[in-house]
Length: 401
Ligand code: RFL
Ligand code: PHB
Image 1 (cartoon, rainbow, N blue to C red):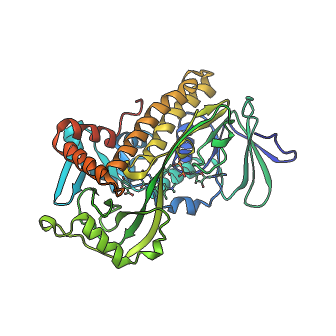
Image 2 (cartoon, rainbow, N blue to C red; image 1 turned 180 degrees about the vertical axis):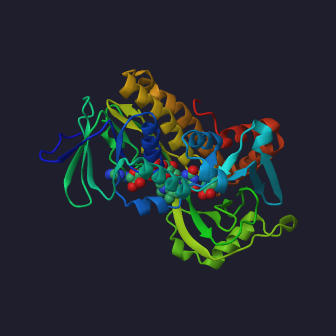
Image 3 (tube, protein in one colour; image 1 turned 60 degrees about the vertical axis):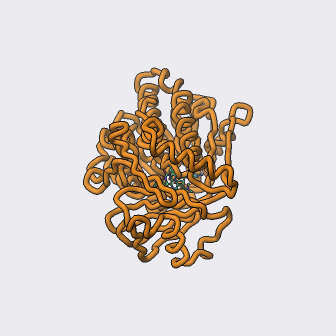
């Protein structure tokens, strides 16, 4: 933490939010609905943030929160409700029906679409945002007048003074490390593999997502719409996506996803995006220090196998918004004081689930591990108790969990 630079042009608000990703934008929307004003500052352009291809699955509680916040119209029209997923390994494919198992479903609705809906809502509310800023720094977090300084897109030095600062700036932003070292504790795990992800202009070859274990490595078939497919392949860390030709990608997907198995066919199509995503688990605690609160990837990262990253960010904000409304409008700090501990219960549950899905489905080359993975997959797909455990975690625990 540093002191505020002299001469910075001042802005005053109740909540200064760093980061305009889904956590920051949803928080500003929920705060506005609760009568609390906020300013959002973001280092990238609005177009860049809106076009980042990331998550694709919304769990039930995320959908419920978006609907109750008035963000459910386009999601209702364009999102696709899925009853469950397919889990498979060579010669076997099993459907897990989450609705039968838990009464809850999931929705296919891309993070790009969530982001567009959030930007539209914030623009309609006429609240203040600053994009393409640099030199973000947090100050005076131990006082009741914390501030954020930055250089705006015209090169001017600015300062936002607030009652509360919320770090929604992902794992590489400055907020997480503003919790001082003696207080901050970080748990981290990196995995010995990455995902090569593609977007393709082709109708999905499946009605619901397929998660496939294969001796060559994990593969997954997801989708964005009736005409756009999203697929992933396990690849070694450090893989350059350009070393994978389109033909090699489709051939590997066909092998790992079981093209020809029981007559199922994978239809290839033009690849429009190709990238490699490393995988790690990371939790940084506490999620509140003084007048600084952390939400979303700023506090925790999960590998994408459980589809939890975006949903956890939404769950954090679903807890934090009412806590800040109580704190700032009613001078009631009970929810704010409980925020870190309450949020971390769900964070650790989702961290465990994401690790469990990841280690069950990715091959490490160890033959003993392979047998354990296959045994686990057989159990999850044949025992109602096993299937229900996966379904309950995947379709999502209620917001207050
Ligand atoms: P975000 O979306 O990363 O937003 C953080 C924002 O903070 C900005 N920022 C700063 N702003 C001002 N000053 C600074 N110094 C700043 N430093 C950073 C950043 O530019 C950014 O706009 O975090 P948020 O809002 O917490 O949302 C979390 C989700 O985005 C994330 O959990 C998921 O997208 C994770 N994730 C995936 N999750 C899934 O559930 N399924 C997926 O398929 C999936 N794919 C992905 C992903 C994350 C990825 N990243 C982070 C590398 C694919 C990728 C590539
Ligand atoms: C996606 O559609 O990008 C997606 C879906 C489910 C996951 C991960 C990514 O577990």
